[in-house]
Image 1 (cartoon, helix red, strand yellow):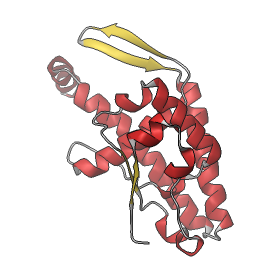
Image 2: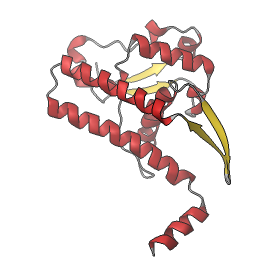
Image 3: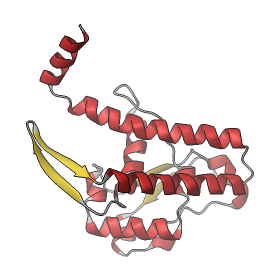
Amino acid sequence: MTKPTWIITQRQIADLDIDAAILKIPEPEIASLAGAVRLRVEEVNRPTEIYLSPIARRFFRKLHKKWPWAAYFLQLHPVDQDSPTESIIDVSMFMSLAFCHIDSFTFAETPDGFALTYDRAHLHRHLAALRRYAIQLAEFLGTPPAEIAMRDQTICRAITSYFDLGRAINQTPNDDQKNKHENN
């Protein structure tokens, strides 16, 4: 199997067809696909179309219960404003799936519009579970501990960079001027 793009269709989501959506990988090729698979959801243009959709949330929660090892396979790299669009989408997809496991969101008014808030501890618990499953699969496959640690660090940096990029993109010009003034 070459480095695939894992496509989940709207039909699979609507039908809650978890079995059809699970990435089918021949066992001899599992290790070679660590961190190499791009995940895309058909007809989705924004992360919120996944984690704010009740049917998508239900689908991805069920998918995770049946097949929790996706984090092992997904292509994730730290991102910034100069990153290729595909890399930013990779991390956005990963985070969209993680947000499906948050029980509640709140929209809060800010001086610049609205912000989405959520239970950070809940997100951290889910991300820790994803980490455990990815490490579990890597250990099962006999991946050396140093390689597992490098992959784990890459995933952690990708998640951190996702939030940093969001803050950078949403920073208002007044924030930029304030930061410049504080740094001088």
